[in-house]
Image 1: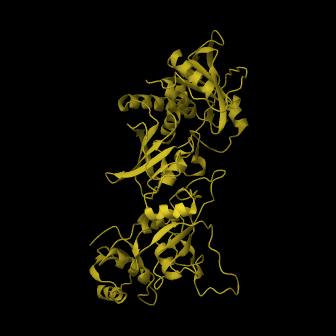
Image 2: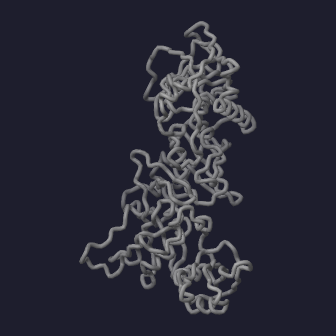
Image 3: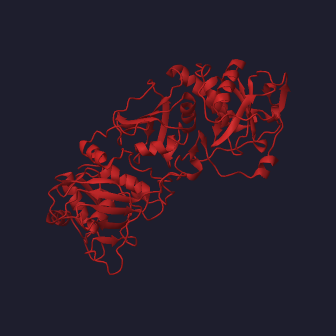
Length: 531
């Protein structure tokens, strides 16, 4: 295996302190946390998974003895001693420190003593690793750890306490071996990772990827694209160690519950050439690159501001099946739930219309049409991930004859007018509206979110209403009906196909919650199907 750090290791600002060796004889087991990358227990920091602090008494009670062969203390050894590790660190995190330098053959974590041992296949690999981390301090979960030769030449455990009895250590070693075998076919580790997002039920943006991958280490560049109808990205780190840590830590993990799975491999590219800083690509080392949009570039030039993209939306756990989304890190902006909607048709737009349209993608709390600029509005959603859904599906969508723009606002909330302040009905609060689609925990509506389409899905149709009545109602609302079909097994639902996507957007705004009978109101959403 290639050993990229045998010569000229980078110099880091912190160097390890010289502390006496303290080889211990205790071993602990720990279970890895959730695989939801954007949940509290699954947050990634410096190549590891953060979890709540463990009970130290329990750790010591679980200690198990091991045997260590001792020879020639202080001499080079294929056993490496790692000190000052966090209490909750896992075997996998220890193993991935050694993977870039060669084959890892054994691992032992002594949680009660904040120490670990890593056995490499030979002294050459171990020497390369120790030399590298002498000049560049290793970190686990934000804590500096100290890497040096052990005074043990071989790491042994008896049969009772072998790694066969330690599932987490065994899994870490197997994963390391699989990674080595994979790099043999892919051409070796690289600073550039190719990321494929499988089962992408919910939108994944460049900023979401940055939020996840930057917790492993500094991200230099990201390029996103779609290939074979699959969302993919190339992500560049400053060195192979960080890239390898990201691959081992994040490969196979889910961004959201049971979906948006990351598949990571090494790219054949060694450097990314980023021409534009926009929502598709970003060079974090060069914030002054143009966006590729002349109008936006001109506006940024006038304001003297570089393009920084949308603020990272740290998303708190929701009641819906979307699971969770990001932890807000120190210094990171607060989660933003407010959208700025611009280029609206002043003659047509109302707070209720925006409530209905944006309500397809989340529960709208407040809407404000700007008094002095009525083609602009602020829309406050209940959750930050809902803002991302709205941006993904509604930005640049033609509505009422104009292509609207949807971006994150700099405002954290939509302020209601003060008592007595004239507002002309431009600001409305919908926090107690009965029409929210996603207020129920685990709402199935999250599974039926689609971009605007010419075909609408209708539900809650009473048995007394027939096809002609529904078609007549849509025609009266200004839509041209092209086709209609009841669901064969459930006449409470139907599909209606209109003349265009723009027509369907206008029809949804007018017809959602339309009263069909004394006790029934129509429910309208966009459909993925056609008639």
